Image (cartoon, rainbow, N blue to C red):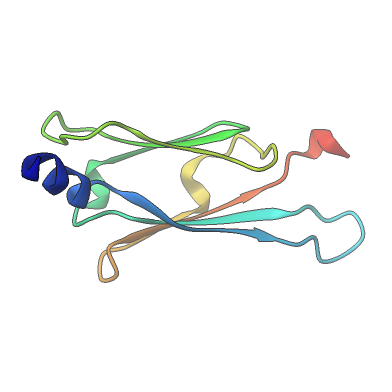
Length: 104
């Protein structure tokens, strides 16, 4: 329906997921994820990071779509959102994560 299409337009989405290669002996691979926030302010966005999944959901009940789950291609450190950068101008969230030490 048109209403469902409108909801899909307003839903945050994963724009890119890039693997950052390890650059020297002992360094770890990284992941860089860029999400479009579809006009939602950073204060509405709840970011959860586990070793295999990133989830975007809302702090507000009026966010009308399901949480966005992104499965990661390798295990990462369960980071805080310290690696997250919101750009109000671009309407994006950029997240950088690093491969789990446990793999080495």
